[in-house]
Image 1 (cartoon, rainbow, N blue to C red):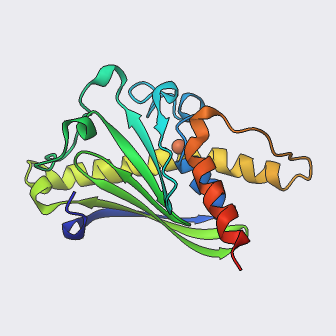
Image 2 (tube, rainbow, N blue to C red):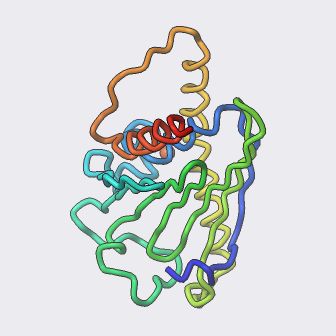
Image 3 (spheres, protein in one colour):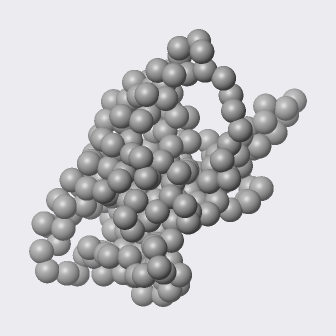
Length: 199
Ligand SMILES: [Fe+2]
C-alpha cells in the first residue's frame, strides 16, 4: 500500500465522550453493520460474512469481503500491485492498543485516538490516499465526498458507542460471551490479559 507515501486527502475531528476502547471494539467487528449501518455498509459488506483472523500478535485483523466476491467500488485509482482479493472488500486493523486502520483498495483510513481520560478522547479520522491514486478527474470533489462519507459513517457509530458507554456505566452491565463475529475483539482481550499479567 506504500503507506509511507500516502498523503492526507482530508480529515474529520470529533470530541468523543466515551471510553476509547468502546470505539476500538466497535471498529473491529462488522457484526453491527446490519443494525448500525443498514445503508452504508450492510448492503455490500454484510456482517455475516466478515472474518476475524487469529493473529496471536500485537495487532488484530478483520476482513470484510464484498458480497458475492465482487470488486469494491473505488473513488480513486486503486494502487498497482494490490492483490486481487484486497480489491474485493476491505480490511480493518487494530495495532494495540489504540491505532485503528481501515485499508481499502484506493485509500487508507486512520482513526487516531488521543486519549484524555477514561471517558473522553479526541478522534481524528485521517483519509490517506497515494498521490498516484489522486490522478483522476474531479479529485477535489472526490476528496470532499470521501470526507462526508467518513463523517456520516462515524455519526452512525457514535450513536452505538454512546449507547454502549451508557450501558457500561449503568451498574447493570454484565460481561457475556462474544460472538464468532467478534473474534478480533477476543484477540485484543487476549493480548491485554497477557500485558496485564506481565511483571
Ligand atoms: Fe461501525
